[in-house]
Amino acid sequence: MGRIVARLLPDGREVEVEAEKPLKVSELLKRVGMTSESAVVIRDGSPLLETDYVSPGEKVDIVRVLSGGG
Amino acid sequence: MAKCSVCGGPAVAFIRYQKRYLCRDHYIQFVEDKVRRAIKRYKMAGKGDRILVALSGGKDSTTLLGALSAVRDDIGFELVAVHIDLGIFDYSVKSREAARRLAQSLDVPLIEVPLKEVIGATIPELAKKSRRPACSVCGMIKRYVTNAAAVELEADAVALGHNADDLAVYNLKSFLTQDLEAISKLGPRTDSVEEAAVGRIRPLYLVYEKESFLYSFLRGLPFLHEECPFVDNRQMEVRLKEVVNQLEEERPGTKLQMVTKLALRIKDYPKPRGEIRRCRVCGLISSSEVCSFCRTTERALGKAMGPAVREYIRRKGVELGLIPRVKNTATG
Ligand SMILES: [Zn+2]
Ligand SMILES: [Zn+2]
Image (cartoon, rainbow over all chains, first blue to last red; front, side, top):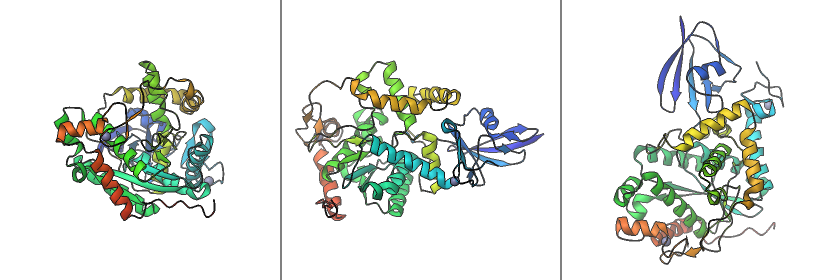
């Protein structure tokens, strides 16, 4: 069983998402309870498109695009 | 691999409501075009104007200052930034660092207002002493200090970092409670009151929250991506944001429609009743004899601090060569 390691920002918490095969970004976001309107997936410093794939074994950042609270 | 719809380069984002892919450079241009369009369409600023940007160090005000500095020469306005050091522990220290670095890299003069030094108390201290929720004290203080800075610097407008998502959500929230007077304040701009209040503009009116994040991220602008420790995630706004985003997923462009239609009808909403007065202590806009800033500081600290804030900003403005204001009329 493969895993995608996702660091959830800004909190910094890490979660592991079980995946047999590459997951579409939109699917990965759904698995962690987010949508493409409210979060951006970043791999190696570049934002990914909803239609891009993330493979088991890869590490990504999932950034919630929140307001600072002001 | 998806390609930019403009130049064919590698795409970094897909604009769902336009069915377009964009590369890094064209994405940045796309956001700047939105800001330029909003400024012109809603007559936010013109040639020779001085725009004061309320810079918190978060993503929205960073995108705001970044995009405004990119279009300032086309339109011909001048930028000044104000940052309030709220004294909210480590969060404020990091916010201040981001604001300083940004202002310096974009070559925008920055006035810093450290609350502890200027009024003798931080937001947490003030909240405790006045027995009010930190967020309500904080909002009031920020509005006051920003307006005081704009009046002292003779700014033509204060630019706020509210994005389309924020405005769609405030609109919906006010609608649910039928606070129509609150909706009347959610347009792209509000008017000035001579020498007491400077009008506010929202150049990110057409920019989505995600677009605001990506703009600063792709440009590599320094900003603090952290939540204020006082933020309450049970607030209705948080829930409404999810609802609005769900609608956006199903019908791309919903948020844009919400804000553009609101702008068209904003004049039909009733304005808050009650006359506009000037604070007896500090002279700035107030709904009663003494403004809420002077009243709160008087109660919590034993002295109304409005005049001290105005004096501090005036001194800093003189030091930075921003006061007296020299209007550039040479190319008028
Ligand atoms: Zn391109
Ligand atoms: Zn006052």
